[in-house]
Length: 319
Image (cartoon, rainbow, N blue to C red; front, side):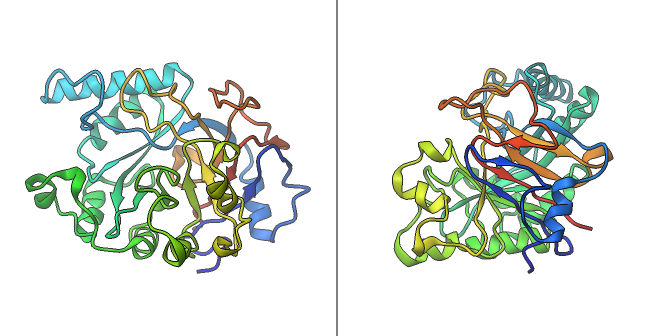
């Protein structure tokens, strides 16, 4: 797959920590230049691209019931908290599950909040991957994608959901979700347990890091706060891990409950809305404040000149 704007693919632009960037002054190939400019009238949204659902055993407060009304109230209270804290877009990649997507989508629509459905899965080796889809993707199609990964609904019901792994290895999973299912894959918590940078060692880990179809990864802190080894890898400065295109990284909250959504460290992302209804993923920009400790940012980056703190990703799903 070509790196820049393939059919059904993504375009990626990397911005290093603290660097001033401007589409007009940054030299990239033409498709990336056009992707950076985006559509007329596009604006930035404050986003959190990984929040969990009430199914998570650590979710607080626990749902008061499992009937339709109780589930609807739980979903609305959860996303209302996000909206009250300035979040305008959430992605919902729960571990091996999409059972709360319909309630959360309904609540998001009522709150005029943009929501991207999805799931988080574990590759056959044990590496976690966030799989995010268009806002209009039906739950039945998400269930079908899980089943085709070997994670059937029956298996997820009969066995311990959090212990299941997909049938595909990391590289195969990324390619399958993006090429066959129409999603976008983000390597989850790369610097933490079961993350891309914490799994395995030597040449095998380096090969997975250089997976050609992977464009984005999630880190739990700013690049400058990573340990020296992972910091060099993320910066594309380690010869053994050097990629043709530097992997773009994002920050998410990994929130599990009303108290955490929109507030939990490490910070938020800024996402640029380029089409009505957010029918496609347009631009994901990780953004943290100028301080060493990331905190909630109240003002979106300027569209013409954005001074990035942390890292930035422009990920266009092209028609």
